[in-house]
Length: 194
Image (cartoon, rainbow, N blue to C red; front, top):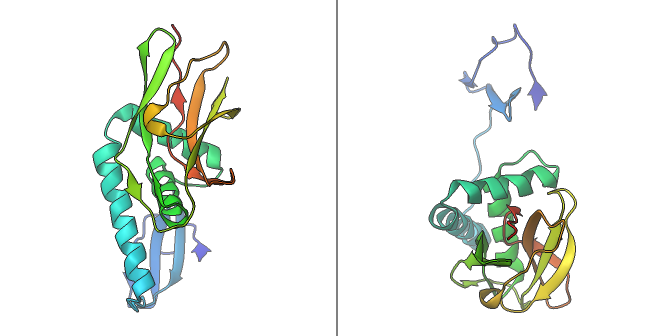
């Protein structure tokens, strides 16, 4: 894919030209590529992945509804070092969890229920295609870029956390039964203190 500069096909060219080249903009970068007719073999694996992706999109639309939840996933995306949005990061995490785990939950909305006691809202249990059972790990830190491991949680539905001095941001991640990272299961949320 070639990056373009003016005056080649103007500053704002988009779309195909005589079924030979396609001009587009990706993440603000103007590009040109050869026109190709996409293949669509409809294999069972491809159809299953498309269904998983559709389920991830539906989960985002139904579960990540508040502005602070979107902002939390945007923080995860920024920390990933990849040019992606919070939605991209959420979908990627959910697809990785579906592939590796038997069942899991996603988390959102870190809420202080009583002074110094923080809990989350969780999704319904999601059935994955993998063979690994899930454990959850809590990461906390003074900035969104300096999160460190704090504890392991077996059941997300019974999770609660008491912030320590200096804890300003937190997130939960999904791990397999051996403790290996699988995916993020929450955005990076600001932690409130009593």
